[in-house]
Image (tube, rainbow, N blue to C red; front, side):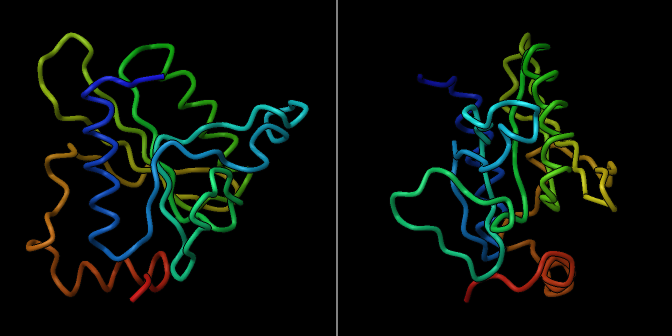
Length: 162
C-alpha cells in the first residue's frame, strides 16, 4: 500500500542519518519473533518503518524478515493517534526482543510542515528509557559529524561496516 509523501521522506531522512554513520539500513521490514512476543500465534510480525543493522551485518539481498539480534535500531513514523498507540505497543515488544534503540518520529497531521519530532529510546535492562528528542531537521548532516560524535556512536552501538 502506498504511503504519504511525509512518511516516505521522514523515514528516508532518519535512515540516511544512520547510513551516514556507516550502518546498513532498510525500510519497511518485518521483525522476526514480534508476532510471538505480542501473545500472537507468530503469524503477524510487526513491520518496522525502518531498521538499522548491527555493525558488520549485511542482510541477504531478498530478505524482508530480520532477527532482532541483527538490529541495533528500529524507526517508527507516526502521524495519527491510532499510529501512536501502535508505536507504543511496538515499544514493549521491541524491548522484549532486545532491540537496543527505538526511535518514534511524530508528525503533525494538521500542519504542512514536513519535519518530524523524534523520541529516542534506549534499552536499559528490559525496558526502554527516553534518552533524547529532537526534530528530524536537527539530526547532524554528514559534514557536521565530528570525530567525537561518531566515536560516541561507535562506542554505544558497536563498530559500523567499513
